[in-house]
Length: 193
Image (tube, rainbow, N blue to C red; front, side, top):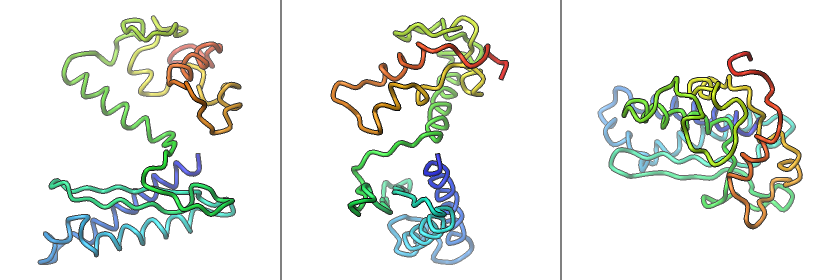
């Protein structure tokens, strides 16, 4: 959870750092690109500052930042280690759990689907073929999922997930994670917590 917060804070610092570079100077057009050495230096400084500030005693294992401009020019950089004990530097192809930041992307896509009138925020989950039996699916709306008010059991709190110890076994699927969660009683009735 701390790593997720650090990434979010580092990203906010990155936006602020880039924004301050882009205001008012004649070279602003050149500096807008993440291909610019000045923008890259600002990104690195912001991320390193926040990793030091928010790491505390628990080291931030790794962060990956990717920024692209509208022309497709980009800057991708990793910070930290994929293995702290062995001091193996993180790589751009490493897999990261983005945790709570996932919700932002999922809700953005759901809102696009609402805009396209392919679903409505007040549709119940029972409207959708999910491939698993979700408790209270006829009473949980898409809106309640987006607002985190569904009451459904957290998949990452299941004993099966804890036994993985962050190692993904062969044959693992996302559906397995969902199946583990829906086996458990919901925390509360929809929209009551």
